Length: 518
Image (cartoon, rainbow, N blue to C red):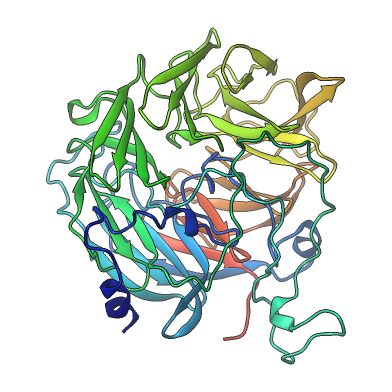
């Protein structure tokens, strides 16, 4: 079996068996961690099936649903997944997804054919009922080891979508299973700094073990083989028990997570675990950490969090604070890192609905939007269109102000889109579009120019609905109808291989995409 053969090749001296392998584990556009990448952009640059052109035609639909082993704790349920679209095992090429549950469970699924590969409980479910801010159980998403380089603009390999016709495509197009949706025109980029990290080209044929990491309610970090969920080494103590952890991520032989809400007596802050030595380091935030994504990382290895009314930078090596920007109002979203003309910028939104963009050293704001729309704690999403314009997507609750909305009246909430305008080096953030009315919209994701937004719903009588939205106008081009039969609390959205995933509060995982023959 591949798991046994792989286990024998792991160096026993590694704390988790992951040291030295973290740089090699970013897949070809795989959704690796909360918010897709280390920068928490929620932006999948390229996709072989999803595009504005394909979504305008019939075909994208509900594919399957699966009830996972889990017991919700307060509003905490199943997490958004970590995905791998090109796994090579003893059964050939496969696509896999890994889903965490609030009852300290992790499930591996073959997402092509909706088959449960493995399921395990990594710690006992805490007996106490918990509270809303401190639900207990597993609270962070699972993650795959990644790196901090910006993902490339587009990816060369497409997914398997249409029914097979032949092993050979049209002249010059190669095999039909590798034929891609044409990528958007490339955007000219400014020269990157000399120390800028770039995500390495993936090597799916590399003979290295691959892992999914999960953090249980006892504060222990588990490292499990993708193939079967086995743990080659014992779990390692990372956080205090019963902490509310967010944004688990691993890069450069370290794992990081944020703790929020002072759960279990654990103060808000950032924690680091050296995967070689097992050493734990922590940084205490001066005020409560905002948002739901945990720390965002720049390609240079700087961590950013929104804490109270400040954006704060922390050096990832020693967890020492290196800078702070004061917004004058409390932040409501996590931090987000993006690139503009070869420079890193950091963005987050305050509770009054204003988006603040600061320079990488947090010395000043380079742009601040107008406000007026109420926010819930969450996260921004950001992407860049084919013309080079940077967009921000921000979910809001209640009526929207400052927009000319052509997509209907907003009473419950909506996704608002803002665009950053560069006039001779002077940046401003201007209203773009506002979506149709949604109930408690979650952070949207962007897949190859298509925005997927989730109206999270309230109950079984008012369940969640997934929408596909034109990224330039906010017009709805598809919706999931009555396919989802529960509301969504912590499931969020993820995408990979031409498919979109929604996890409902009742423990049901849904997949939407283009059907294919098996």
